[in-house]
Length: 549
Image (cartoon, rainbow, N blue to C red; front, side, top):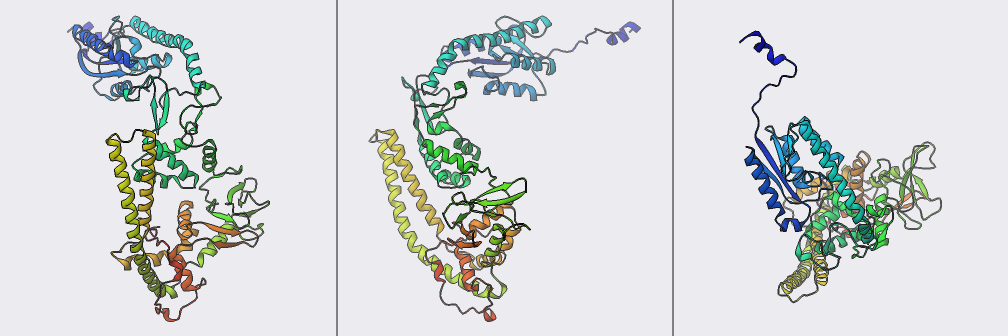
């Protein structure tokens, strides 16, 4: 080899000969079901395969094969799958075959940017089977990019004619696009023909009747995680994010806020899941602010927010912060001037509500001197409740059998065609399932036979001895759990006298107070001479599973 040949590879403009990769992907798409039925997809695929064969390409994978709108690139599942595969593949294809370039994208600039990434960064060419244009040459790139921009212009021109009709459709109270969760969408343009109807009609489906109950639970103050559990028991499992989105979507109260309405709202013609007033009430619950104060639900300085009630008017106290002072308060919106500082400060009139609560909670904490008496009392109480619960469960089981039998009959009647009204069927089914759920929850609330009663009693003692410390030294979420454990229905606060009044106490902690007299009084020699269970627990649920704090 002479000197010129040895240095030729260093010469500017010299291209090394690299073995050509002949592997390709195929992508096909139609924009409507009619095109799919007209065999357009089959035609696209046949032409792409023929092009690959004629040009010596090996088809590695085929993507698409369905109808997907090209208005957005990554809203198309098959298209996204194609691009993701190209990006992560170590052995990338030489090119992507398309019947026409508008099958690739109609998004204009973003389509050009995506094509540039494939060609310039990933080294994957785009090939238009119908014209033979490819991005292998600079001229070919220009033609491909021009076609992508042309496809976008065609979409814009088409919208000029169709957009007014779409806006009119929405302003008439009809819906454009898929209906949200909980609804069945009937109409002339549906993918599933079982939902075909000459005119649009959007009605609650089986899931919808369950979600309708979820709205009522939310209005009653139930927390989302409890609502999710209730729905799951009834057969509907959804994520907390989905439930959160449902609470905030005006569609469910029959209001359209479609982006095409350009800032106005329209009353829809579909079936409401919740009234407008109840929807707005839920929004205030979500804000944690029924009266104009913006709050944080889990503010560490205000753990009693929404938990304590005003003794004068019965309204729940809401928390807020005076930011200039950095001081937190609980305020009653029903009483003029009814507020109390959350924490004790040098300038506060008296003790803060949080410190008052810690002191109040201390009377329910068990002392060392009363442990033995408490253990005996708890065992006697458990025996009483266990005996009562057996009798209750016999009655509950009869009720459960009755409603389960009714539900079974209802389903059989529907299968036999004896129930014509689908809406009535779903409503009756949902109602029966809800009653069955409530009965099962009551049965779960009754104490079962404990396999290790001594262990349960020991755990109860540990928590009971330190309950006020648990609250004082924990984060805000743990504080809430302790509050709700000891006082399941909250507390009443006399703000004038700064005194808490009990509404309802967990039976275990009420036993503590009864045994100690609320003051930790010493019982001589830790006496165990208690022969009767405490009267305070009759008919009360024993919270055996709540000591895993």
